[in-house]
Image (cartoon, rainbow, N blue to C red; front, side):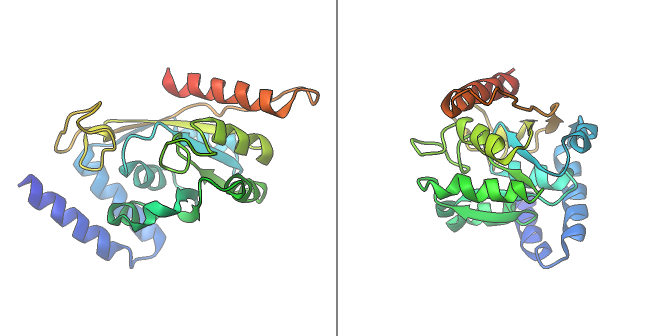
Amino acid sequence: VVVFAILNLFVSLYFVRLLPIEQRRRFFKKVLGRLFRVKVYGLERMPKAGERCLIVCNHTSYMDVLLISTFIDRPIVFSINNRLLEKTIVKFMTNLVDLRPLDPTSPFAVKTMVNELKQNKTCMIFNGGLLEGGNTRLKIYEGSAMMALKGNAPIVPIRIDGAAHTFGSRVLGKKAWFKAFPQITITVMPPVEFKYPQTMPAREQRMRSSGKLYDVISN
């Protein structure tokens, strides 16, 4: 029964991509809300951040993109490691966002997203760099802090609990066990802004900002 339900979900995801984005969002709200009993907390904090903001979340599942873009009702520009677009599950989960495929080893990756922020857009990057971690130029949290600083934008930390146990988990068998349809909660935390003296070196600003961001998301 579980396998049949999952297959039906993926078939629906494929065909729903043909619908206008608002209809797709309503569809996903209904489906995800019923399957995973999704609860969203702190949604009233999004307007306080403004249109120009950078969303960062504790990335444990490929569903995270779909969850955030479904329940955060605004256009989102999402940076993604260009190699990951080859994965079918990634294509499914990113159909509500405006994708920016980037090379995480390129210095222009940060610049691209900074330019999007300067156009007063809501952007999103995951805390492992461009969706995947590793020894890249966009290290955990530091890349996000750098983008926010250069783009003069607050960071909106979002914590997702429960998705690590789903079929789309990135940590299944390592830090989480499988559950068919676990309850998922999405918590929008207060926006974080970084204000420093102009005399402070840029590297020190990035280090302080990434440390602060780590503390907010980890606690």
